[in-house]
Length: 117
Image (cartoon, rainbow, N blue to C red; front, side, top):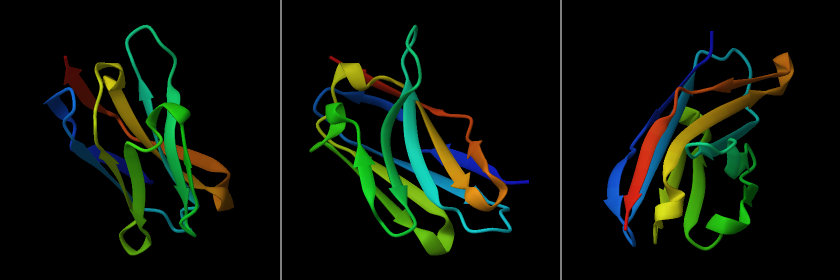
C-alpha cells in the first residue's frame, strides 16, 4: 500500500514563505509524476505544480515565479517552496504520486496553508 504524507503547512503573513514536503512510500514500482494541488473552501481542487521523474515541471499561471517544485527521486519526496504568498493562496494543499505501472494516483490527506492579509 502506497502512503503519501504531506507536511509543512501553517499560518503565514502575506509576503511570507512556506516550504511543503511530501513523502511517498511503499511503492514497488517507480513513481512517475508527483504534484501539488490545492483546494480553497467552496472551490474545486486545482493544480498548483507537478514534476516528473526527469525533473520536468508544470505550474499553474497563478503561482509561476513565486512557487518552486523540486524532487528527490531517491527519497520519493517532493517539495514546494512558496514565496511571496498571497491570501488567495490559502487552502488545503494535497500531494499526489502517480504510478503508471499500476495506473493509479495516490493522494495524501492534505496540509492546511493559511495566508493572512
